[in-house]
Amino acid sequence: MPTLSFQKIVTMADLLNETLKPKLAEMPHLTQESEDIDKLLTEVRTLDREQETLTGRLREIVRLRKAAEKRGYDLRSRVAAQIQGKLGFTNENLRAFGITPRKVERKKPGEKKNAPPVVASLE
Image (cartoon, rainbow, N blue to C red):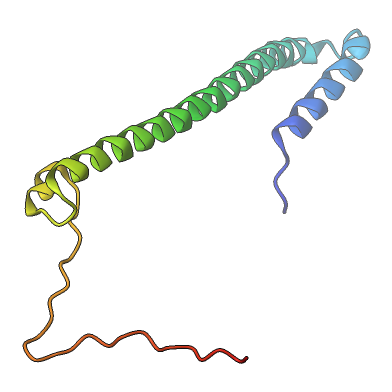
């Protein structure tokens, strides 16, 4: 059995209550239940408005947090670049700042570096 949505339940309760009110003279034993439905609908609508307000606030906070994250990343990148410029890109002391130094390429003894291939021109 599929579950009903919040809005569908509220609509059904509202319809039931609005249809029941004119008939309370014929069914006085349902007066208390009609009042309970009124109270419930008021509470549910208040909670729904509060949820919408909080959802809007949450979206605003998420937007602000993402903007702060971007500013933090940019700031960290600029500071890291300046530290690398001062200490050098391969300096092991960069690790103290949370920056991974570049690896130093080391040639094995007797190994020659290959020159890039020469491209012959077709003239």
